[in-house]
Structures are given as C-alpha cells and as structure tokens.
Length: 261
Ligand SMILES: Nc1ncnc2c1ncn2[C@@H]1O[C@H](COP(=O)(O)OP(=O)(O)OP(=O)(O)O)[C@@H](O)[C@H]1O
Ligand SMILES: [Mg+2]
Image (cartoon, rainbow, N blue to C red; front, side):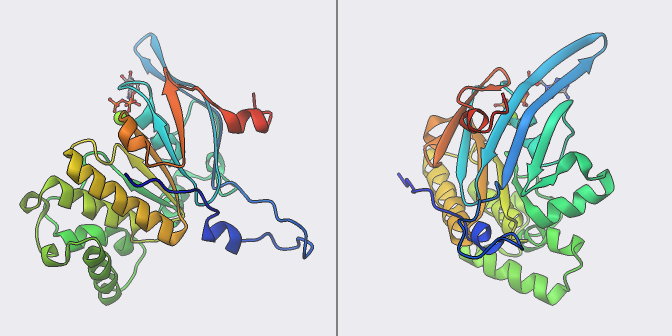
C-alpha cells in the first residue's frame, strides 16, 4: 500500500507574506482552518445537531483523512469546509480567507479558484463526454476552447483515459468515471482538494488505483487534500487520520495547540 511521508507543499513555500524580514523563519499559513464548526438542521419543531464543534487545521501539502461511520457528519463537514453549505456556527478559513465573509455570489468564483471537490457519486453530467466533463470548470473561468481541450486531453491522458475522451459517463466503468471526476477536480490546479468517499462505489483493486492516482497528483502539485471515508484502508493513505464520532473529532490536536478549545 502506498504510504507517503508528509512534506511541506510547494504553494505554502511560494506564497511568503510580503514584509517579512529576510532570514527569519516564516510561519506557514494553514491551508484550511475550521474553528468550532457547528451544524444543526431544523426538521419541523425538531433540531438535529449534526456537527458539534469541529476544529481542524491543515498545513499546505498535508493529506488528512477523516474516518467515521455512516451518519457521523462527514459529508456535512466537507460541504461546509468547501463552502458548499453554510455552518450554523463557527468559522472556516481557506488560506487565511474567512468563508463567512465571502458572499454567495463570490463563493462560486472563490471555489473555482481555490477548491477541487471529488464527489462520492461522481456527479458527472450524463450528456457530456469525458473530456467535456473534465474541463467544465474551465468553461466557467472563460478559458478558450482550444486551451480547454488541450489541458483536458493532457490530464485525461495522464489519468489513463486517453482513449476514452469522447465517451459519455454511461459508456464508462465506475473507476473510469471517478478518474474523470478527479480530472475535473484537478483541472483548475486548486490548492485544496476535498474528496468525499472517493472510492465508495469501487472494488478494492480499483480503489487502490484511484487513490494512488489521486495521491500522486496531489503530491506532484503540492496540493492539500482532505478526504473523508468510513474505510480504514482508504484512510491509511493519508499522512494523518482524524476520527469523527457523532459530529466531533476525537483528536483535535490542532485545536489544543492553538487554544481554540
Ligand atoms: N438536510 C438535512 N436535514 C436533516 N438532517 C440531515 C440533513 N443532511 C444530513 N442530515 C443528517 O446529518 C447526519 C450526518 O449526515 P452526513 O451525510 O454528513 O453523514 P456521513 O458521515 O457523510 O454519512 P455516510 O458515510 O453515510 O455518507 C445524518 O444523521 C443525516 O441524517
Ligand atoms: Mg457521506
């Protein structure tokens, strides 16, 4: 099994704060910080607490897995950390940007610039080809068609799908679909990637292949990856595993170090 050693991400070292005296040790800005994130859903008169104070810090280049049983709040947390959903309480910072200060309108652009998201059920558009699905984020960015095609083709080729560019999702296997969804998450070269059970529907051989591909891409680009899973074997690919039980993290090391608690 692939077991990789944590290292500092390229982006963290590239983006030094301006005005820092030369020769001084530079503090590394966390790529993701969540502080006491709370989520409650209201169902009629009933309040359902789902996240009960999640504090997590990830450094640039880190790969962290949140491991927890079904229903413990993994998807809810990932959606909130990625700005897809708003928390009931608490704060989220992505490379120092406070998500609660970003308007709904700005959020989509912010996500395109900073975040890649890999969904458990691929979320591919059935009427589009593999190539068109993979380059979708570039369309929203206004990247010209020729450049989109070139980048999409190169990325899909690197993911072993060079001969499947014109296939529609229903003409592809589960593993191939998830490769396209990885390509779509990577195409903008985001700094931070979220993966929600990225191999939840795949057999164990394909699971290994997809995770190795994801990890290799993330390491090569110095990206930060947060993945959530119920499967300890999937979590073992990460540098650090944090357990989630009933909407809480069991080992909030970052929280203790930073006096958030
Ligand atoms: N929109 C909603 N309204 C009410 N309750 C919700 C809503 N979305 C999620 N929940 C509840 O929040 C809890 C956590 O759901 P979530 O999808 O985050 O779990 P999960 O850990 O991702 O589970 P799984 O491993 O099965 O994907 C569940 O008990 C679920 O019923
Ligand atoms: Mg889930």
